[in-house]
Image (cartoon, rainbow, N blue to C red):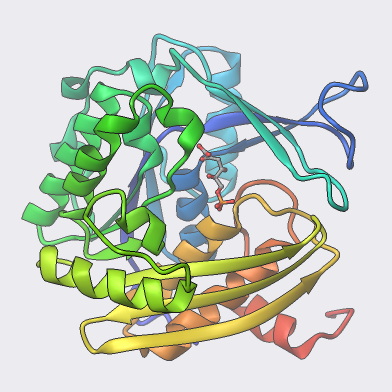
Length: 340
Ligand SMILES: O=C(O)C(=O)C[C@H](O)[C@H](O)COP(=O)(O)O
């Protein structure tokens, strides 16, 4: 387990949305209520890092209205530095969500076009100020999917972070619904961002979008060979990581993880989950856990195993953001039903 020798000055750049969820296990909009949460892949990682003891800054744009105010309050409640949250024109991005039940899968409907974040011109961001003192920047493939301006801004941020010697993590997070009509551009834009990353969260299928790869359908072998090809192509990459989920309906899953470095490949898991409370944000919790452990100089095997446990624990916590602390790792493994 990481011992917090290193406290990161981390930053994330990306859109934060208001999530509107059908209550319980209901399908969408079958009753009069929706539950509200705030989340977004990058902010979820920042919240995870803050819970693990790091300083984490969210760089985003929120509408200058009561919804933006509420979101800002929620980010602060998660312990995040909101100094570089811009208030601007445009709306709050939304997503609707139903968690599914049994073999009826969860469902997400995005309603985020023309959001304050996606409308920000790329030259509207002040990277000198926003990345001042930052030693780790986390980005995801969701941001370039939101339009040309956010794509350019993400690239500017990544380049600036690398120039100042910060590590850059990039979660491929390929969302087909957000790339509709622009699929042809995706590979080139995502490839440029991967080229800036030191830590990459991606599957073999993701990597096949940015480079020619022959995949066999055997997930471990495909991951290992695609990681090898990515290391040959991208000189700055230090680690490539993926998680595998095997679902038996919405309540039971098995999680596994695999990490490739230039020294070889290691694996962690399985973590077997039953009675899942919340699936959203699991991948982001994993990313936060891994960044935390790698930044603390933890060996790769411990880092991967702890990150997978943090991902598992997140499945017990409602909402998008990860509030898992280091002490929760041991408690989860102990499996006791009451901590006091
Ligand atoms: O799709 C988007 O644009 C989002 O940012 C919504 C989600 O909150 C995260 O993507 C969660 O992703 P997982 O951690 O893999 O569950």
